[in-house]
Amino acid sequence: MKTLGGLAAALVIATLVFAYLYLRGDASPTATRTAILPPIDKAFYGTAGYALSPDGTRLAFTVQTVEGKVSIWVRALDSSVAQELAGTENGGIPLWSPDSQWIAFFANGKLRRIPAGGGTVQVICDAALGRGGSWNADGVIVFAPGITGTLQKVSAGGGTPTPVTQLDESTGEQTHRWPEFLPDGNHFLYLARQTSEKQPSGVYVGSLEGNFRKKVMDGTSNAQYVQPGYLLFVKDETLLAQRFKLSTLSVEGDAISLATDVSRITGSIWDGVTASHNGKIVYSPEGFESDLELMVTDRTGNPLSTFRANGLSAPLRVSPDGKKVAWAEYTGDKATAGVWIHDLASHLSTRLVFTDAFYSGLAWTPDGTQVAYASTKSGPFNMYV
Image: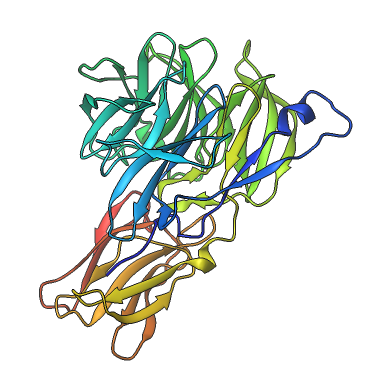
């Protein structure tokens, strides 16, 4: 089975350069949107698969080839040519150094780094399944090493990570992810996901000392601070900017709408927005799911069956007898499409699990009669059959 791109082969990233003019009070801001396509015969791929350099000149992104090879590429925004970074195979979730000269990324259970122009890859530390990171001017990286648990900090030069946040078990808090440093290089924003209705998920501020925590807003969007003093975040597919005071670490005033078609990587709780220091914003527009076609081939590459999914499909699992395919669909803010089974002989797709939740880790039993999966349908992630 082959699928081209976890973000779909037809994904287009749009670049906005009007936002800061608007935020400064320009009465008639000019919007300039530039579509950025993946390299030929490749597709944008993966969780949080792209990041704009702090100086706004280059975009790092993850792509997948039709053969299934995944790696990180870099493209200057004033060029149509992208460069693959050798040594980044299976890499994803790129993040930039503050001087825009290095790129850190997660690959094969490690957090690694490489010069932005290419060069030797260096291992920073262990990170089983990264969910975002941020690099400050003092050479400290705060990152999420897995899909559950707290944030950790480590030297960009390598070392042993130490925790900088703590989960609130009283609210069923499961994960801290997508940290973003604030200008002082000590405090950082991060997303905390909880299961308690009394304490919904939201954006918090933490510190490198690990003894500070303050909630900024409710919601399940990652947030990023941008000059001249705003938080960027997404709600209901709308990119918003709201005034943020560094002196009080709090939002104020009404949020301003900047774009209304922003997509979400639902399974990883990431809204595809990344911004530079000089006024450029990159995001992935909504509406790409309809272009996602799943193809089943034999071992020689001959097509056997094709079918469409209504959202991002991950992971795909073929039954032991090779006659069926199981997958999880993600649409909207929840995995509302649940788990599906496609019969390769009849070409019919049947919904197996209906509960609105997040689904992951699908696996068939050896006899092909049952499917095991992880789900949040009862609160924290648990295994079901």
